Figure 1: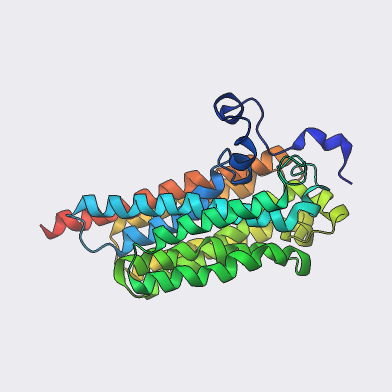
Figure 2 (figure 1 turned 120 degrees about the horizontal axis):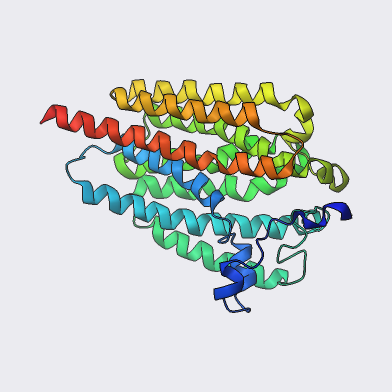
Length: 315
């Protein structure tokens, strides 16, 4: 069982907007979907936005790109909710043994498995409606992602590198976003995708350090367990791989200098994470993990400014 000394480590926020504004009957579903913890949605969404903004050919038609980014935003919320629901259904026995996850709706008994499955089916239905608004090539790409979505929760049972499989899953939007714009996949999208996998290896290893001790008792595998206190050199390596591949994505997409300025400032943020993270402090690990949203905004800003710069120079 989980360490009772860590009983306050639950990842469910208390006395926040869910408790204040959501009717009691709906609260377990909101928490099952992680709507009260949106960082995962952001990390799923940003590779989509990076890819869309690089691939977009008509920056003088600004309303259309905003519309597509909004559609992907809604899709990220729904698909992340579905992924979390499926993950919690599969991991409910493990979650009951980990201090951070023991209060989640399924292990705590707030919801039963049948209700969670019906909720999952509903989410997948709405995500399919969103997917059907894309071109046929993007639709097939979106359907293919389900293989990764449904296999990822099994990986922590069989490998110490489930973060790699999370990277394959969470960065699929780099390919899907490009496909939605161009109707094909080009080299910049592939480089973004692989770079995103390295990025996920970094941030999710930091995240997994929150549960390292409990995961040993529960039998859950992770890169945090595999790398232990020697994680920092690996984190530097993962983020260096990210930045290298993102640089080549910019080169192959022929982006102008603001892209590289944004990537440079983002690099400072990533290396700040690694240098300052306290691997054995769960709260600090969570803080550094969440700070990847800042990196994501910085990188996106560099892409957008590069595209606007190129548009101004061409007119």
